[in-house]
Length: 569
Image (cartoon, rainbow, N blue to C red; front, top):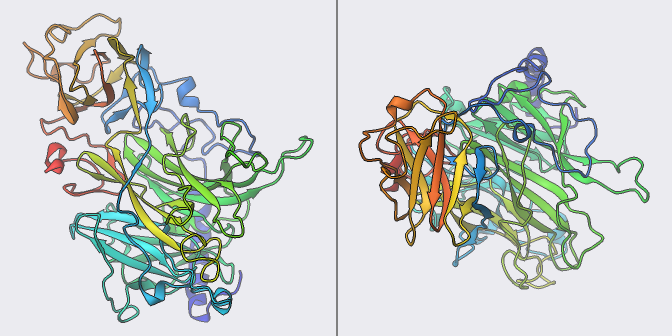
């Protein structure tokens, strides 16, 4: 084990004595044959063991062989892939995050947020930082506050800010470092803070996984009851590299370590192709005991591939996967892929941008949209001139919109070369996307249809997220043979002419869908214009989806949408 402060060594030794007992259980393939919430059955080897990453796109088995019947009881059903679609004349369109016009929302303005690296201070650089480097932005339903953890100063400390509306942020004076908003003074690179609303132990409600950078020790795990006062190191995972992160997969009740790895050139390539940064995967039931893995136990997971576009003007730089943050959103795992597309220049930061991916089994990623949903600015002096990075928790659900917090760096563009260096001057910004708005199914100007694969539900009320205020949407229900089930025919469906992210579908002569619960059916959507984002069947008239709400949001009482329309108020 590498050098670590003496006060923590006893804790670490005790931890490893316990964790070694559990690690093999944690990392075993006991999940072979497990059936997931949506009908996907895991293969005998789980997680799949990947011995060598290639430049080919990751295969997605559940899209090649979807379940015969898909259970849709968990969450809004998104059209980010063809998993749910049997036939359609609609065309899929992907959407980007819209930046907030008043960005950045958190910028460095405290003395302790200025350059913490002694070597940079000696050179006269102030290089301020108040930026999420994963870290975390969450809505806490207990305190009814937005909460942000971010890096203050270069690799210096973890700071804390709060907001009542998600736009205006305060940096409270706390008692950890009196008079400052520092909540952890420990040396760090990137870090993840996770608000665990399912945790039974109140002292473990908040979890921090911090990469200890100087000396280069590895991932250090801490717990907290309030997100302000953190425990001493409870675990150290030395077998990884910086920019490694964590997330929780509630669909399977496992924690996942998303581990940065440098991958060797692919054998047989002439000239050799450098793969560079990629990710390894390790899952466990308990985050603490799971940190005791041995070198080589995590499996290769995912990296950039031949479909990731080269940046214009940088034809010789192959994109690399810098980081992967993930979170459960409704019925899927949302992945934010931070991809480096160009190295820094003497004045400009690295060109990191954020791309989206989606997974329905928690391991295989489908990435059909190869444009950044959150990109850099091309204007020198902009706060996000380079090195855009995602926040832990990925996004929040706020009424009709998703809030995405992300960091960017101005390099020397704002302060000049005498006050800053190429990867400095970091702030935190905000962007918006329609709820469920990653992808929509659109008409081409004529009427279109979409028919789902056989699905099964236990609810009563069909809801949609649709933009059809200048057109109309009608829905019919079919049996397994494709025959319309009366009275749920198109003629009985009350036309929807609306642009709403939560809109009920109703039929004349039918109270609800309860008579079809537990039976395989298909939904056929008829759209005369506009676009369809998602559908779901709710057990009550509120439209609650019982899917996951990422990093939370106002009105929700936990990690899932149990309130429906009440959250919009």
